[in-house]
Image (cartoon, rainbow, N blue to C red; front, side, top):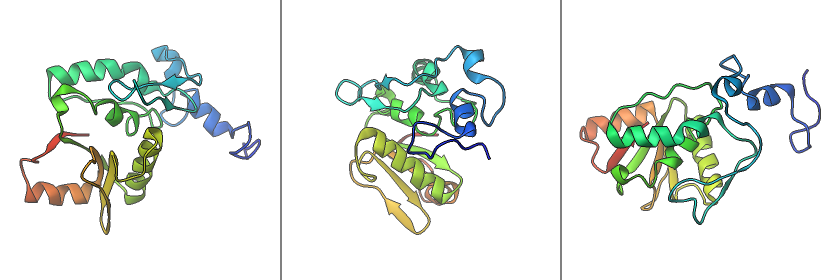
Amino acid sequence: DGKTEGRGGHHQDRFERRRCDGRGAGGGDFGHRTGVSLKSYHFSLPGIGTLQKLQLSHALPIQAILAEVRANLSRTSNLVVQAPPGSGKTTLLPLSLLDEAWAGAGRIIVLEPRRLAARMAAKRMADLLGEAVGETVGYRVRLDTKVGPKTRIELNTDGVFLRRLQRDPELQGVSAVL
């Protein structure tokens, strides 16, 4: 079945190992093509990083282009990032944009198609920051909301976002939609 030792042990199942090497869903050897080192290390985000170090169990491919993404977003308001699943688009990209000058004090809205995905991504980002969900990172899905006055990153399902857009077409207080 591809499993070696349980998730709590030192070994992972083969799928997880492949995904960490960049050869999981999405195909190809992503790490080899981009030259991204996929070893474990500490990663600090600009602005947050001086006091808060994010400890990742393995490097994610998106980390190699975060500086380029931030630079491009400071010049233009539109950007398309395409990467295979598990590369860090949902978790690391929004966190890296928190302290950008163009974001100001506005919220960064991250769209997720499913309620469970929105809740789990919010939990993962909050865990990386060492906070509870609803502080810097929160979510808003049908029948459940965890946001607070300090929330800067808000994960929304598509339906919740569309209703918000109907109520507020200018998206007051929103700096970015990912």
